[in-house]
Amino acid sequence: MKRITRRNFIKGAAAVGASLALPYSRVRGANNDIRAAVVGFNGHGRTHINAYNRIPGVRLAALCDADKDVLDAGVRDAKGRNQTVDAYTDIRKLLEDKSIDVVSTATPNHWHSLVTVWACQAGKDVCVEKPVSHNIFEGRKTVDAARRYNRIVQADLDMRSGEALREAIAYIQRGELGKIVLVRGFCYKRRESIGKVSGPQKVPESVDYDLWCGPAPKGPLMRKNLHYDWHWVWATGCGEIGNNGPHQLDACRWALGETGLPRRVMSIGGRFGYDDDGETPNTQIAFFDYPTAPIIYEVRGLPTKTGDNNMDVYRSRSRNGVVIESGKSSPNPNTGVVVQCENGFVDLDSTTAYDNKGEEIKKFTGPDIGPQANFIKAVRSRKIADARTDILQGHLSTCLCHMGNISHRLGRQVGPERIKEAIPSDHDMSEAFGRFDEHLRANGVSIGDNPPILGPWLTMDSDSERFTGEFSDQADKLLTRDYRKPFVVPEKV
Image 1 (spheres, rainbow, N blue to C red):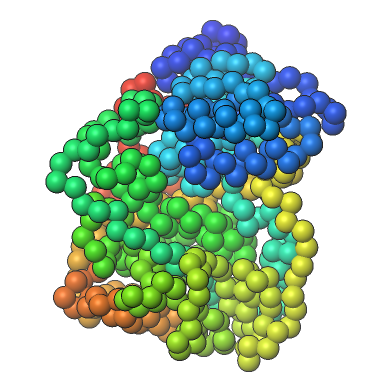
Image 2 (image 1 turned 135 degrees about the vertical axis):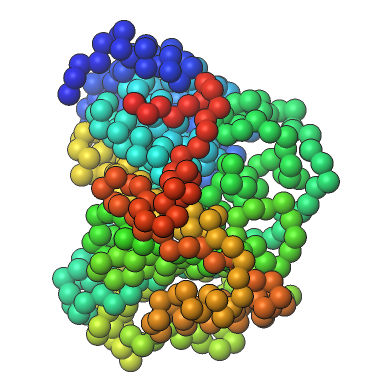
């Protein structure tokens, strides 16, 4: 690798608006404390904090959040554990600290890739939350940065941490149940309306809004809540398929053994059941066309039926399709992956294999060591193979989410008959759309009166990570975004 001089590094840092410290990594051995910083912890970042506090030889050294109230609460919590941590609102200031070894980021989606790139440039190893990117371009830049600066960068995709799941995947890939026919992923998770505002809302005084927006446009706040509801706005979030989808879609792709992107994608979806300021679909089916077998991924944010607090349940019963057990429901959420093979199926959520009669064949068991423990093991060994979900795998699986969303965003509302004509003429996708219709009817929504958005079929060149054929010009525009200086994900990292 080309040696990185101080001049070259500062020149590159200037492009992102910050003169960060030189790439720096202390020599670490088995008995050396690893100093960790967590960036963004108003939500899932707290699980990173808790995980590091349980790992021997790791010390929480710094916290960073653009919301001063969140930051102050984190410092108080650390003090209650007899920990002293440095506090930052600006990630660039944190990265100047040469004593920080690793950075975990659980910021809103639009910050994930930039934190990762900047941290790699500053010589830090990184654990980045799902989705690893807000778009396909910047996800690839995280991979480039990890490789150029010889950093360990792990995507925080929890499903790869469990030994039971690894055994189940190996069982499938040995062909114990024959060839894979179909992989289904689903996230049925209740999402209430985020409300509707009539004009700009006041940003909380505790928030540095310029830093919070970062790479995204710094427009007026046009929703009731700044925090969390950013998931459902395109400028900052990626919808439910980008929120929970990376977990399940990573397991789907892992089961297939696919090392690239699908040949084609299409989406059916919409925002049903309420009129609010959310932009992303709360009900969606995405079809990913891989050579080995297709993936069908389903999102549902509405309950089993109007007035019910539970979510739908599905059960795989035979290779002829998925059968919903009538009247069944489960507490929120209901997520998982089912790999359907010629001679049976594996429920990856319960890590159990069944035959085509639904009789249990084998139950896989084993410890779940956790993504942060995986990450720290790789940081110590300096072996990419020790990172269960290296950033390349995280990027590829996150790309599926983006591809589904791009099809959705380029689509238009059409009636059910038009959708039936467009979907693959096989039982599985037709059956999924039939249940989509039934689910919405149970929630008082008629797709005849409220048509879903049918996204176009988009073809993808996996090597270049660009779309080809019809609609490619429009689709390629959504591979990246216009960045707000100085918060720019650079072309050359």
